[in-house]
Image 1 (tube, one colour):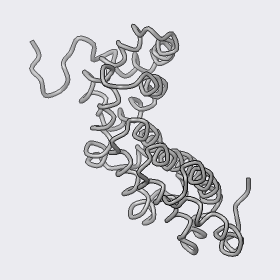
Image 2 (image 1 turned 180 degrees about the horizontal axis):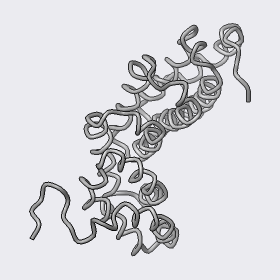
Image 3 (image 1 turned 135 degrees about the vertical axis):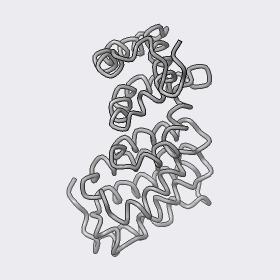
Length: 227
C-alpha cells in the first residue's frame, strides 16, 4: 500500500475512524477502529503526521487503553512502524520526543504480552540508543522475559525466536557479557525445553552463541572474582 495523502485523512478518513476507538464503545468496535487507525498511521509520511497529528494521538490512545489487547496492538504498531521507517526516523526530534517516550511506557507495561511486542519494536533501533538508555529501559524488561519460570509459554517461544538477534545487538555494547549468566541460563533452558520448536530455535542460534561466547565459557562475567 502506498503513502496516504494527508488531505484524504483530513477530509475522509478521520470522520470515519476518530470515534470508533473511543473507550465508550464495545471492545469489538474499538478493535476495528484501532485497525483502521494503525493502517492509516502506517501509511502516512512523517511530514503528514506532523501536519495532521490527530492520527498519532489516536495511536497513543491505544497505548493507554485499559484493555491489554488494545495496548498490545499499540506495541505491534510501533514494531511495524519502526521497521518500516527506522532510517527516516533516526536522529529526529519526533523519535526522541514523541515515539520513544510512548515506547518506553509500553515496554514497562504490566502485561508480558505487551512487553514482548515492544521488545521486538526496540530491536529495530537498539543499536542507535545510548548505553544508559539500553540499561535503564531495555535490559530490565529483557531480563524479565528470560525468566522461564514466570512466563507464559508464548512469551518463552517468542524470546526463543529472537534471542540470537538480541544478543548480537547487545554485543555492540558488550552487554551480552555483562548479562551472560541470565542469557546463557535461558539458552540452556531452550536447548532442554519440552517444546521442540524452542529446541530448534536453540540449535538455530548455536552459531551466534558460539561466536559470541566461545572465549567466555567457564569464565565469570566481568566484575566477579575468578576462582
